[in-house]
Image (tube, rainbow, N blue to C red; front, side, top):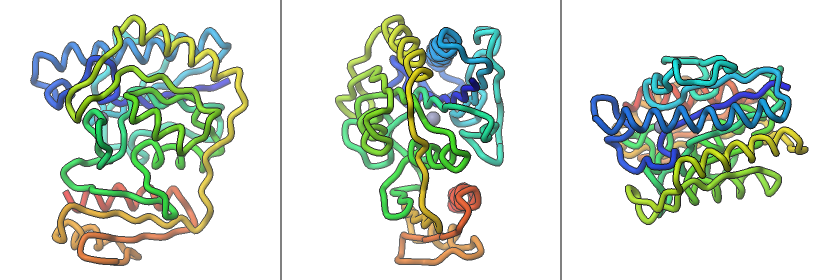
Length: 269
Ligand SMILES: [Zn+2]
């Protein structure tokens, strides 16, 4: 049983502000320790349920946040960027389940800590086959392409609601904080959160879950924040301009769609 963990930072309990998520701030050092502890809780739960291998992909900003010396000795760490498959780098069809830990709601969600989709400066809205998605949907679809289900999502209440609406009621979720705005939340104590994540991770490995699969061709729509950004995003060969802000891209292969999305964000930035 192989487990892949993609871990972000905005959805960790105790994290509510951009400064906590950005190196060079005193509070960032505390936040990365909390992030490492939530990763460890998920690893321990997976171990307890009989996982034979756990790979953790550090998936926030520079993708160099987790404290490798504090990480459970049992897991391998995917560290640094850029990577072809970004937050899901390292995942293939040999894995049995994916955990998305410390995730956040998609751009434009009210009462959600630091809601965004890949780039808050550039991306306003994303759809896959007509369905609004954020990082949960984009990454669950990549797992689904490999035939691997997402079994556990953790973050604030908006994140876990978004995940359940998209991935179905068999999904395990842990709500670690209740947002009362974009940068304020009622946070559960880290020890309580870690215990909940450990239990949920253990439970997932004993459950039957289906992968999130998209029908081909996959149609990606990205609404940028300005028409200039859309001008740049539209440079991707095969991309179509739908209106001032919106670019569409369709392909049979979701791996290609995923890379096109990342290239659009990069160009628009
Ligand atoms: Zn992040």
